[in-house]
Length: 367
Image 1 (cartoon, rainbow, N blue to C red):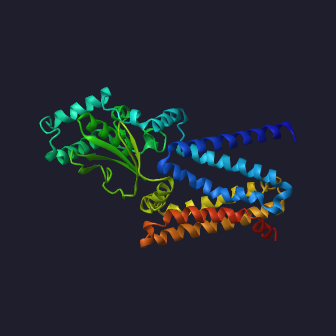
Image 2: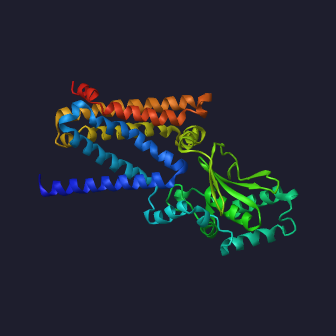
Image 3: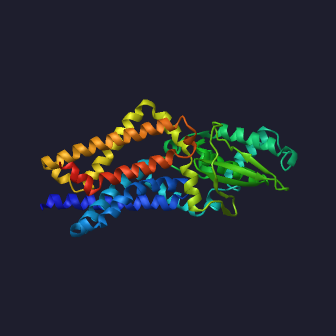
């Protein structure tokens, strides 16, 4: 092995380790539905890692496992970085998730007080605050005012960080944020006005719940800024004093996996490009399998057998994912869309990747 090859391999190993670290950091810290989405990556790769311990791999088990761990870490890290590229913002995100009561609900912050006073002044609400007969009216006005002053914008656009948690001050200052920023601002304003307000988390959406003195529940921004958010099981709610966990991890996972209508929103955005998505997924699975099975070096050395195996993996991978995309499109027109779409996508992807990494399948590629 030359020095150049050693250094190249060393850097690839380092990137693989860092990829695992960043992936696991986001998966464990972000919690809620984002963590469950991140688990899809591990779900797809885990069977291939476990297959390293098969009896027929006994003589080269360590090499096989190490190779698969490194390439899996590289890919998971790359995917994680694509959705969470703003690494300098990560420490604040970790802190806010670990201490959300004090960092995300800030009724005494100067910007929040200014926002609250401006809201009360614009709608001349001083005589209505605390009047239980007019709570709904106050909440509707606050929803309108917040949507106007804090324009709904994807967090990847505003902060280059999926699932970003902005403080109320940041959301107010920037003047744009997604439902998370809007929710923490409204809850902070309402608590400052004396209401019993809570931020509620569920898959794909945050909104605000308010209780009056009789325990009657009011919902604020329940349907999202575009009035089309599908409601899923509530996973958590919190205010400036406490956090209430409403679902165990299994409940959160199922709550996400039945959120197919929201998943299909992204498929609708892709439109005819879904064909390209299927092709890219097939190519990605084939390349991943090529590295896992130790064929990449042989392909680069123009080994005919290895190149033949790569062509077959590409063909089968692309056809399999195009078939999966087609099935998902068909399900869109059936009642099954409401509960099976994400389950089908995640576990069929896992099955395709696992089959491509089976020695028996690869033996057939040699023929």
